[in-house]
Image (cartoon, rainbow, N blue to C red; front, top):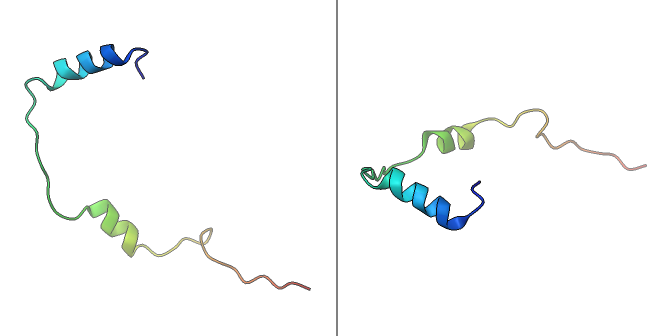
Length: 51
């Protein structure tokens, strides 16, 4: 994204200097919904007959 690694590190350092880090524990709602979702028709495996 930035051409120079040092510049990128400096920008991140400035942005995160006073930031508060939150550690969120628990299951991801997105992952849970993805695992419980029914496969869509374009995912479905179709049986193919070979003649």
